[in-house]
Length: 118
Image (cartoon, rainbow, N blue to C red):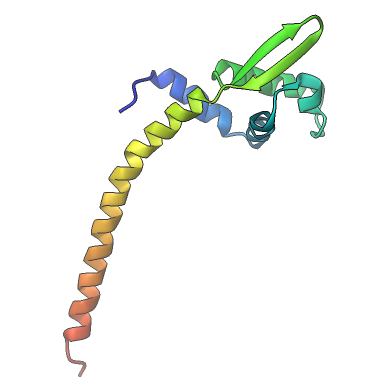
């Protein structure tokens, strides 16, 4: 399994729990953008978007480059890959458990079908 700190994983999941931040990430997945460009489609203040970006930066999901007065942001996908690997580890566990449950339900159904009805 991929090794990473639980604090980092906690920050990633906390960051992506918010729909505005997920939308920001989706935009940055298409191309890097300035903070002003990121804020344009949202009906909140530039300050509010800056705070969302700060959360994404602290989670390692966004990298900011300052050139003069312009702040350019780009997506850093690595923390998402780590979160995905963590989820994948548990998905395998649940797939096995769900497959076993499916087999149990099917066997019960077959037994019921074999029992003659009154």
